[in-house]
Image 1 (cartoon, rainbow, N blue to C red):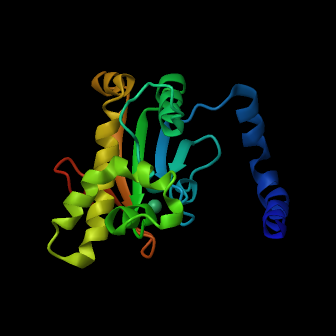
Image 2: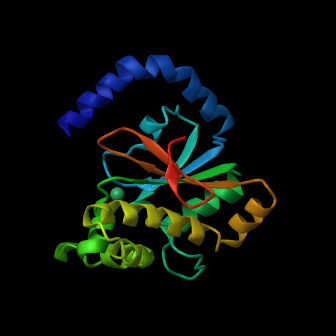
Image 3: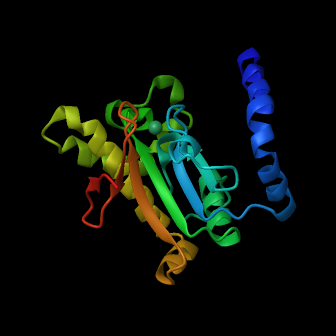
Length: 202
Ligand SMILES: [Zn+2]
């Protein structure tokens, strides 16, 4: 907690004076971010830092391996689906970015098995991207399987987003664009999913 509080003091001393007016305006009129980002919980891939975004700019949900489950409006607790519903239906975001990343532990677990102590929830959660495992294992170059799996996990999340009727409607009406991205932790470089299914620099 001491490290957190030291950071909080720096926030109060250095950032808050600079950003106070923005926060006050956002408090008065509410948030209206144009972009939603679904990213991994990994501590190295903070969307707000990568996109140099300000408070109020992005509606963000982070989870293990940046996955979106298929549309399943049942009685289970769907945190990510709730965020998608809020972002798309209530906030009316215009762009929704699924951002995968290099060295993703969730994808590693998919390829190599879930750590035994993470069997209650992680194993079931990452099974959303089970198909990414099949695609990755078909890659002839073992060193590339991790990245192939990470890219495929992004494609699966985007495909699952389109199973949400209100997402498909918004996309069809031109009110919402879905994008895929992948961030290189060691390189700091972002690549974007292209119409042909490949990933390339912006
Ligand atoms: Zn990850």
